[in-house]
Image (cartoon, rainbow, N blue to C red; front, side, top):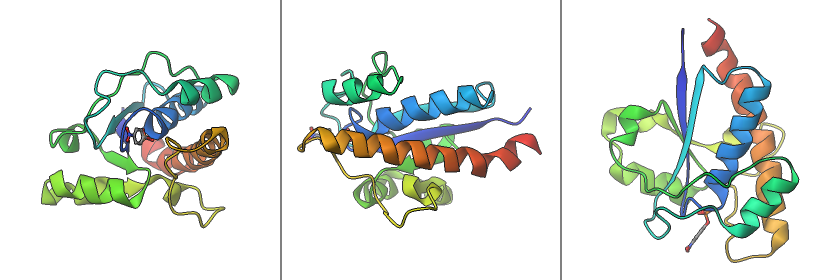
Length: 160
Ligand code: 4NP
């Protein structure tokens, strides 16, 4: 049985990438693909290793039915490029940081999340950490749209 492993990546691993992980987990379960898709998240920075997601991210996600409370921050490592088929970054700075530690043969595993949300030309998921609550809602909107597109893009690989 084919499986695919995905790691969502942002800067701190306490706002955007845990949100993407929670949304993706939910949608993958709804699509009955949980045994086919492995999902994780990580940060390019090391400030929040071991920390739970930001309280505001947890609250906004919880209101939409996503429970992020069990997630803990970790930092991406070169070994992750062997563990994961896709490393899906939130913004261009994340992509740049990933490229600096990525083995050359695995560079095509790095993608931007919003590539999978074709109905918008917004390229990045903006960092909500230093802003207000609206930023967290926008992250959720973007993650929901992009994860739907990501699952649609993966389906042919999972069912072939
Ligand atoms: P994230 O947000 O990358 O979406 O987890 C941030 C969280 C923390 C910091 C920056 C961004 N920080 O500077 O500590």
